[in-house]
Amino acid sequence: MAVTAGMVAAGHPETAAAGQAVLEAGGNAFDAALGALCASTICEPLLTSLAGGGFLLARPAGQAPEVFDFFVQTPQQKRPAKDLDFAPVLVDFGPAQQEFHVGLGAAAVPGVAAGIFAVHEALGALPLPEIMAPAIDLARRGVMQTPYQAHLTEILQPILERTPAALALVSPPDTPDMPARAGQRVVHADLADLLSLLAREGSAGFYQGEPGQRLVRDCRTQGGLLTHADLAAYQVIRRKPVHTFSHGAEFWFNAPPSPGGSLVAFALAMLDPLTARTRERSGELEALLLLGAMDAANRLRAETLKDNLDEALAARMLSDTHLEQWRAQALPADLFRRGTTHISVVDELGNCASLTSSNGEGCGYVIPGTGVMVNNMLGEEDLNPAGFHRWQASTRLASMMCPTLARLADGSEVALGTGGSNRIRSAVLQVLVNLCCHNMPLERAVAAPRLHLEGDSLDFEAGMDASVEAALLTRWPGAKAWPGTSLFFGGVHAVQRFPDGHFCGVGDPRRSGAVLQAGPE
Image (cartoon, rainbow, N blue to C red; front, side, top):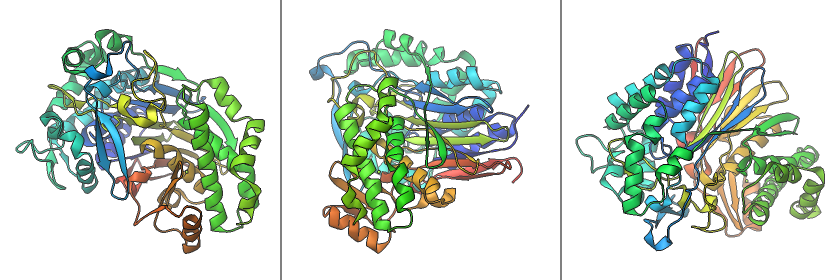
């Protein structure tokens, strides 16, 4: 049965529009997610890329959910650190700064290009050229620079200025050395040609074709690690998601070895028996409980998950005995007296797709003639908790990315996720708590002010009750109170399908998200 109705939430209006066009052409939720993913590499080039990595959490109607893992892989061989193009850059978010490492020596084996074809083969309904057509058209006619993308360009300028090709990705054709201002058009002709090639030749056109050949040659001569063997060996892995029941709802999260999903499930389960007892109490108490669960998840990650997570360890993390031990440590009794870019799609048949993809911040190197910047995942501190250059060879990197599906107590189904590096798990957790504990409608659950705890450092957005802000500043005197909402706290793009078949959705305004419906309103 051809699909014509559904809803898409994404990080850019043109990303959502590509997904909408695929639905209206008769594609299903998975076709729409792939079409939107291709478009996102054009209109969100600083967040995702065909040379990045990602995950799709897919639930075909009436079937069990499944994770398609097309995240990045470590190379098969190392080189001495002194021989690598690997340099620190400081990214300034305003009230906070974060250090990343870039250069070809920070690039891991990319997976997005392979993921597109693997997902299509398993779940697609439309031919791939039809799925890619909106993105190819978008790349040729160009994308109008939005205020958010212009702001993101300013933040990531230290990376873009490393190479002229990187700067050209965000610049108008007539001034390739000057980033586009809001309202100026950026054309991606090389990427249009590459997508057209891949529509004809499949993933081999990327990995074994000229793009992959050039990437390998430049890695060999310019301080990178990737080889022909790395590209040839890459495979998309299909996994069973983490599946939990909590707060009267059912959840599916990203699977091991990536810990993000298990950590969100752990934090939710930590709160489950406590929120019912405290729901009628103060906002201060609720905030402290939430931060206690975030802190427990952070410490569990630091103390237990330095290596990749496996299914057995994930199951032990979520066992009743383990949860009670952590509740006693992280949520003591005194609390009762005084936590990337994303595409979510649902369709009228009940198919649900939650797809998160990332290029890190990009390494600054663009594969010549393609318009594709390569990832910098080997330079991401949160993905390398044991330290840089200590990764195990030929291993799937663990990610905090957490595409999520939920079936709420009212029978509605929600697909959501976010970008945001190590803020991903805190953003997803808070939206789920808002939905399930506070019964907020989806738009309010996403818009509500957020907290993020990192070690002893607390950041929080303006807009909370004055009593809550006072309680936070009393317990964390050095906490940073942000003047408003910020992309620092992620961008949760979510869609919801209700039992009667109608839809709602929200694109997080923190990252200028967009939501569009296909078919009748």
